[in-house]
Length: 368
Image 1 (spheres, helix red, strand yellow):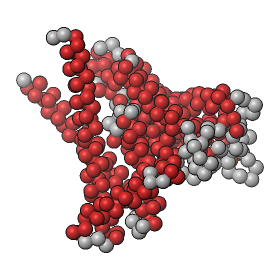
Image 2 (cartoon, rainbow, N blue to C red):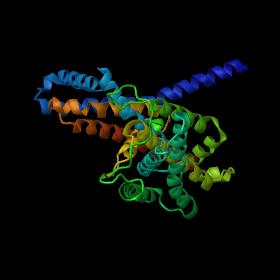
Image 3 (cartoon, rainbow, N blue to C red):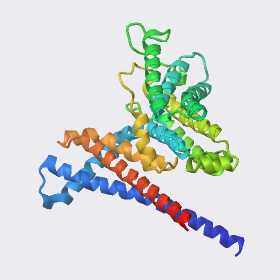
Image 4 (cartoon, rainbow, N blue to C red):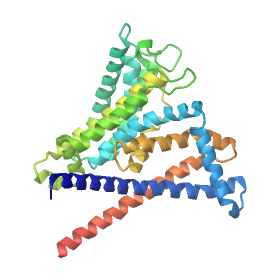
């Protein structure tokens, strides 16, 4: 077989695999929406024969609330941006076989980095933004690396450690916001960041800003890193089979730490740019922001593909953006959470089916 035919077969196989990987999430989305329609019918008093009218009503409201107007589209974009960062952050950990619940805390620490570094006066805007991004990378990577190191060195459960790191991070952030030298007297917030630290917005009346391009760029970069480099190959190898990877000469502990550092770094960038483009300051946290937890759903739906996280974030961002309009039309905004929950259930089912299929194959090999 000629090299040209081999390349064509390789490309065709890649396309087929990509379609297969996208098929199940797409089906999960469709089924979740079809199930959610029944709750719309109940809320609006539709008869069972009016199912498709209710379906059209739901689709229309979601579209109208998320993309129908420029203002709504920009609002959706402001939700999508942090979800891309947190979705990609979670996907890195998933690819290494780790469950980084701490993306939430890493995002918060990125916000603190952005809020503090954004106060530096007299800097060129380009330099200032780069400093904020680097600050987010450093603090986010550090916050993710701690539970990664504990996992690699002592075998402690990263889920428990990252949950604890979330609340340590939130309370540390609240101390900085309320009681440190960065506190505004009489307010529970840091000062507004310098003009040079602010990312350009697309509209004066909306929070959507150019950090969306950064999010997409980092998603593409992480995809390249995971699939086109030796570093990514080792991270994915550890996620697939740590024992086989170690037997093949891959340092499992090092790659676990690296994956958590990378995951935290991306989440940290998300938090830093959220302050630079949206908040312009850090306020006290009554609760965790939620972007990290939503990022888990984004990564699961994207099957831990960083580029897939872009499309997944758009879906979840659109649902979140349209929730207010749904409520104004007497449809409970919980419909949005219902759709998200059903999507996650179906995606989780796919993982369970694959787990038992792989287990059965291993059993056949042993018995054979």
